[in-house]
Image (cartoon, rainbow, N blue to C red; front, side):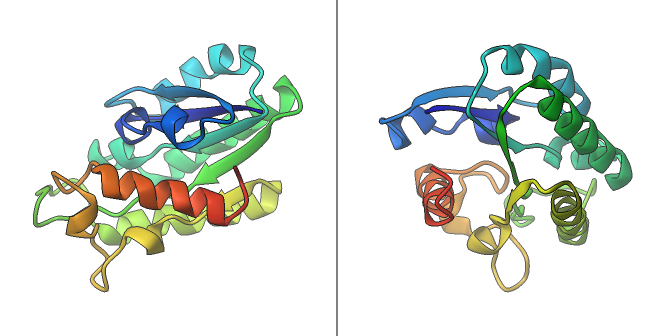
Length: 174
């Protein structure tokens, strides 16, 4: 099976080929990218004809003050393009929490992250797309990224990536 991961730095840093050695795995994560930039790269990714496409985008958009409605609109465009391309199973992954004690920002808060995840879940239900809510597996009771899964409050460490991998496997997606 040909599996592609598409997203930003969170996707990029994942050792997906190590996690899933029995599959052809392609990592199309680019640090710092926002959803509109990921959309621009999508045709090249689809040209590779993956069987499954895992997508996570939106945290950099929120960090730049881009409204959630525009992020969801970009997800809608992405879904439409994937549907036109071929027989590709698409899996949308929720935006992960941030630990604001380690990663201080005024650009967004945990409520915006939870809001975008609710909208993503709704969109995926409407479009009959698989949605994986990773957020609860990474979040503390105060809606922050657990310290043991991050090195800077935003990006994941090895333990965090193992949790992500386990979430995908527990949902029987890989």
